[in-house]
Length: 356
Ligand code: COI
Image (tube, rainbow, N blue to C red; front, side, top):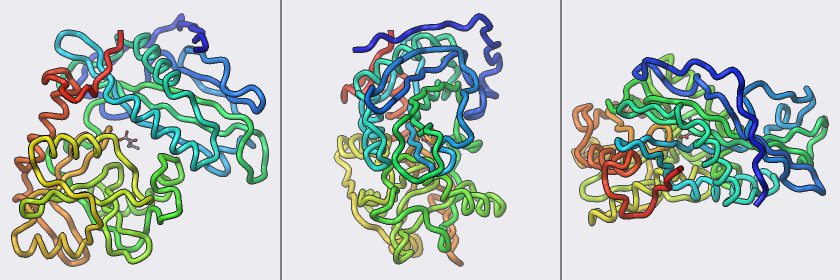
């Protein structure tokens, strides 16, 4: 494995004093990880350096053609003071799936995980300790060739930055209001929907903005062909409890294969619940709401964790789910998942990795 060069800051920043006001994603720690890729040389020069601006040519290809992929992970501080990562191998594997789709040279997954563990260890004093807080980790890769022509890059940068965070949604664990998007689409099969790439989030901005103006938290995307089947919610995968079945859209290439999604499925199945990954139409959800079979709906994501949906609007049908309150399954899932992540429950699945 390559040696990671370490250059510590001489000007450490003031850490947040009130952890109840962290919000999400606007405070950054003292250091970042960087390495470069150059054709013929591969990934090289891994280093942890003071957090700061990076120098890019205005012609850098990521700025023009969106050849950029990223991941979202968290480091958790347990009551005993240990630091845990949650399934970092899954994030590194998904990063390479995104790389493959975006013609980005693959990274060595074990090395990238080691780099993240080293950075988190350097930044350990930045990991917040208040209930529900964590250190959000954002690995990303950008194409930096100065070239105004559409080709896969030959020069790239891999960076990792960290941010102490609270809840992603201001609602916290209170149910969110979601609007079913019937006009815009996020992705289609054959496109990039399954990759965690900048362009998918750019595609979501317009609908997200319109939803927020109407006082909704995010939008629920429908498939790009028939506008019939449910895909995912802004930054989360989505689950519906209908009767005794828990349904989540199948992975068919247009939605993100969430690490929290796969963990939720495993936890629910371990409780003996019937979890089905299959196409589910918005009509099916609407019908179930009308005849009282729609018991709960919730989203899953690293940033969002488990986020109950209390209100879903599709055209003229406003569905108030579980009286707008968090449901029993969503609450139990939240408690179990976060219990494992914060080391309050035994990690029987072997999902956590301790950072020393
Ligand atoms: C995550 O859940 O980690 C995400 O990447 C979602 C978002 C903050 C873009």
